[in-house]
Amino acid sequence: MTTLSFETLGNATLQVFENGRPILVTDPWLVGTAYFGSWALDHDLTPAQIQHAASSPFVWISHGHPDHLHGESLQRLSRTQRMLVPDHYHPEIRDYLQGLGFDVTVLRFKTWTPLTPSIRVMCLENENQDAILVVQAGDALIIDANDSPLAGEEPFLERLIRRSRTSYYLALCSIDADMINVVDDAGRRVAAADESHKRGAIAALADCCTRLGVSHYCCFSSQHLYVRPDSTWANPHRIGFADMKRYWRSSARLIEPFVTVALDDGAVTPNHPSHQSDLTRLAPSTGADDWNERMGEEDWQALERFVRKFRTLRRCLDFVGFTVAGESRVYQLSAGGPGRRGVTFMAPRHSLMETVESGYFDDLLIGNFMKATLHGKFPARLLYPDFTPYVAKYGDNGQAKSRDQVQHYLRQYRKEAPLEFLKHRIESRAIEQARSLLQTDTPLYTAMARTYHWIKSKTA
Image 1: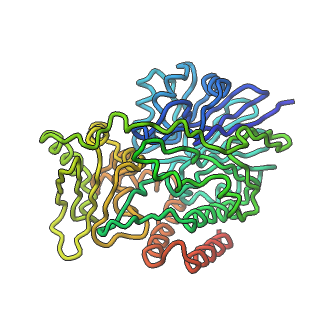
Image 2: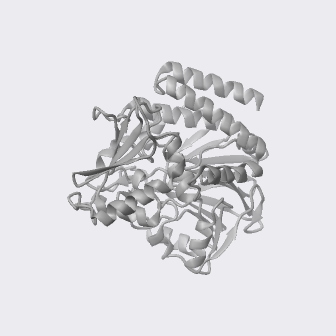
Image 3: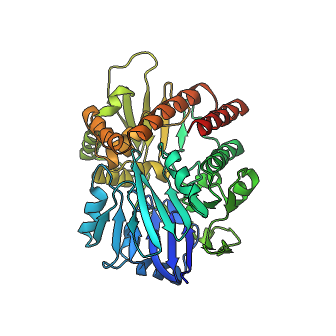
């Protein structure tokens, strides 16, 4: 008889076993930090957990963020392991892994790939430059959504869930895993460390699990700790298991993080029952970053060239500014006028210039030690939808920086799933409009959102 199980190791690392043998590991972040030393794992993995990841014949990478495609952890892996990656618009992840000497397989969209006689996988990539991995293990279904939004895949996933004896949904539940170090012109923080934001995020995920009809939800993809002295302010924004228990209202059973789940009988074994983060990980300094280090003229010129590559920003912003060690530069993107809209970033030189060199601005946003000041009228969702998607999703990872390039980029995802793509685009725009008109933490917004999702579930 084949025994199947899985373990959640923290953040977005999932380990799947067959007869006690590790078969598949996802997004292995095993050691070290991410985002310029801002993020650390909640606590150390055990030597056995690291060894299981390093001996799994299959490794899946969802997307290019450094807590998912983690360079130091990749060095712990064997080049005999096969890397599985989504079929994203730009092949940068495939090329990077092949450059490290790995054997890489690009998973075809919505196509089952057998790993063993009992385990098969399917990948659903989307325009957010993220992907969902569906794992069929015997008659159990594991949906590893990690950081990915659902981009119209709900009806497809619902059908898979209905055909399975039991199902597990693993997904991010977070209000901090993005740029939240944001203030307005008056210096007021735009995202308050407020219980209502946590409650809203948990309620939205709980509603999603109920709509999908999954039998279990596993806390996943958000078990990180801010450790830099200039980012530890964000730790109160993290959603912990106590928050999940307090606000969880769903037909899906809530499973804590850091567990082993036996798929034959559903037994859950807690592996970190205290749920206490290892605070010895807090760093004494900002590492290579010195907030007093000044920019040279060549640095400013390189930064300007980097900003101007994102030509799509001209459609929504009049300017982008930067302040480094007290010196500021503003790069005009359009003529503007009364009510000019723009954003100013305050950042340390080292990580800023490393970002310019690598081309991945999202890594700096997510670290949350850099601060953004919004000028003029912005929607309720901080740097969404006008800045972050165009820079961090389409531009960074998709390498689509002009209007024509973005249109070509979006065409690929529309071609893969035309109805899902169109549905997601319409829904996203409607939600953004609602968010711009209403405060998302109010009872009215919550009631409207739940009514919308109820109607959606009846018409799916």
